[in-house]
Every structure is written in structure tokens, then in C-alpha cells.
Image 1: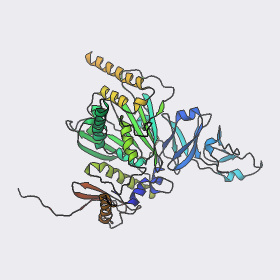
Image 2: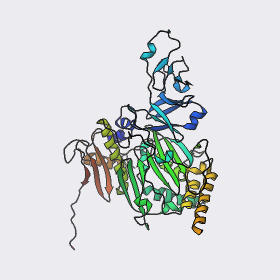
Image 3: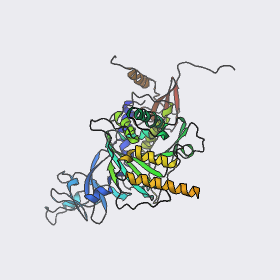
Image 4: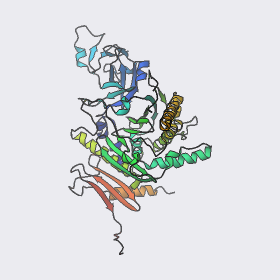
Length: 418
Length: 73
């Protein structure tokens, strides 16, 4: 339970808010690379502000405040040129730094353009996503977390949700929900509707732990019947501060990305790499990305897959859940740990320091701790459950993914026999 | 059901009982630009996890209704 004032402080992400200022120290995905390959400019909304994100013919990326400084028309309908983005209304041209470099209707010798600067951030491509930084200079390095740069078959599901990113993040430090929402509720639903729920999620938690580390919080769980040598306890998986969660198992590696679009809207991206050894990974000329449906045609939540169940809880908590009337218990200490971390890092930014997880050193790849042996399940069984009863059931390459894991399991079996 | 639910009563209790100042340095804890006070429950005990921005202290403050010692063995 929080006061209304502290709930506000933790959930408002616009410019000038304490949380908004802290969040502006990080890079965020604002588009799919394939979006800009299909059409080189589009609108993006991030942290309560609107932008035009674009790709020049030679492959540079840029992000400008959406409204042209001239007469405030949208640059998201602008014309992309090699030197930047030109407003379609009167032809003013802005380079990737936001400098106005051409005002066609003004006199040739006018220095007026030198007085005009568009709001500009920085943009880069990595792993099939276009990433943007809209905070103060100097921009930190774009963190090359393992999943974005590792070898494997990529599969990206995504959807836009009408709720605060913070309640999605609180789910990332809430291990017990797996046993209930994805275990007992899934089983209840399965019995009602006549299908089999995935058994891996139904095990009972014995204890949970949360360890702050340099990239966020490592979440650990121990199920009844497991020893402390198991991956779920010994390795765990991290909340990657401030808006991601690294998860995986059974040769599936994933970053769950929860982009704070604004106070009450989140872009939820399930960035997944399938990488079982022993089989050839099919080449991907283009990383497939697809919308994950979460409501049916009657407007009800679709809850017969894992992420649909999560989405149901996040969205039904309300646009910004009222934490002045919540009742959290000892099993929610991960949430307490996380709220404190946010508050500490907001203070760090207010005092002029970099918050946790801002990377200044150039690097090739950042490996994150993440369990491989998940829930003690047989690896290929876990992979099949993940694909068939999770968001990947909507993937256009679902059958390819299933075959990849089953072929790899057959290779492992043959090696064991041999 | 009346206008006020038990949720409202708990929210009021939170507002009344949440520590307003850091036990170590006395700085404020509850305003948005202070530290943080999160209330959680262990059985029937209310616990306020506190973090003080001014001095960095953190700890749990418990609302004690009845003092109970251990039982003699």
C-alpha cells in the first residue's frame, strides 16, 4: 500500500516528472526495423511524447519531435531524404540532430533557419528493433543484451496495452503468480473447456528470493521437490531495470520488453530467440513480428495462453492501479524491493548521477543470468508448451519453431543412444 | 454495502500509521520527493518498509498492537 502521492510519483512518466526524468536515461524500442523497411517514416509515442522516427536511404536512423517547429504539422507525414526529414507542409528540412538545414520559401540569404531547432533524440537499429534515446546528452551506450545479438531463430510478438508499464513490471518480481495464474487458473480453464493445461506451471513454490545486481533484480524460486542446485534457484532470471525481464529455458531465450508509451499505455514486446543446438537454424532475411491478440471479438480477454493470462491481470488492474487500496503480503516482497529500487534511482537522477543499468562503456555483448533448466521440465516438453500454449501459437512460423525444437531433441536423443 | 469499504479503512490506517520521518535521521519519508514507505502484511501484522532518501537508511517498521513474548519451554 502506498499513498496516492507516492503512487503518482512512481507511475507518471511525462517530461518533468521524477520517474519520467529517470526513465529518459535509457534507450527504448520505438519501431520494428521491418516497419521502416516497409515505409521509411512513422509516428512513435514514448514516455508521453510524440515523435517521428525515420530511416534515410543510406540506412541512418533518426527521431525528431513529431510537430514541425514551423507551423506544428506532423513530421510523421514528412518526406525522408538523405539529409534528414522534410516537412510535407512547407518543405522545412531537419537533419538527424534536429538542426533546420533548409527553408525553401525563405529568402536565399536568410539566416532564419539557424534559429530553428527541432526536438531530436538518437536512434539506432539492433536485432530487428529501432531503438531511441530521448534523454539528455551525452547518450549512454545502447546495451547489447545477449538476446538481441545472439545467434538463433528470432520470433517477435507484440501488442499495445491500455495500462501502466509499472504494473507489468511488478508482475516480473511476482513469482507466485506463475503457480496460480499459469498453473491453477490454466488448469481450471482447461477442465472447463476441455483441453490440457501445461503441467510445468503447476508446481508449488517453496521459497522465493530477490537479489539486486548491476542490471536490476535477480528473481529466484524453489519449488517443492527441487534442490537448491536447480537452475530456478541457483541461477534464476532477472528483471532488467527499468523496463524489461529476461526469461527463458529449454533453448528458448527471451526478453520481455514493456515500453512506457505514456502513463496508461504500454507496448509489450516478446523478443524471442530459439537456439537449440545440433540443428541448422533457418536463415531469416527479415525478423518476423506479429500482433498478439488479447481480446476476443466480444471484447473479453483471451486467457487460454500464458501471456494472455498475464495481460488479463495487468489490464484489469486498471489504467493505473490504485495502490492506496491494495493489500500486499510477505509473498509480495519482490514488489517492495522493486518499488524501492525505482525510488532510489529516481533520487540518483535528481542528484545528477546515472541510474542503475545505464551503460557508458562500449561493448560487444552483455550476458545476463538466466536459467536453462526451467521448472524441472523436460526441455523439449517445455519448448513445445511454450510455443503451443504461449503467445507463439500466433506466430506465422509456429510450425517451424516446433520442428526446430523437436528435431534438436531427436539429435540429443540419438547422441545419448550413440 | 456501505459507501466505505474495508479497503477505505485500511487506506486510512495506512495514512495514519505510515512513518512520516526516518527513524535514523528524521528526514521526511512520505512526500513524493522524499523516500518511500510501502506497507505490507505478514499474517495480522502490518509492516512498513521504509527507505530514506536523505541518509539511505532502510528497514521495516512494524505496527505493534499487542506485545507477545516467547513461550517458556
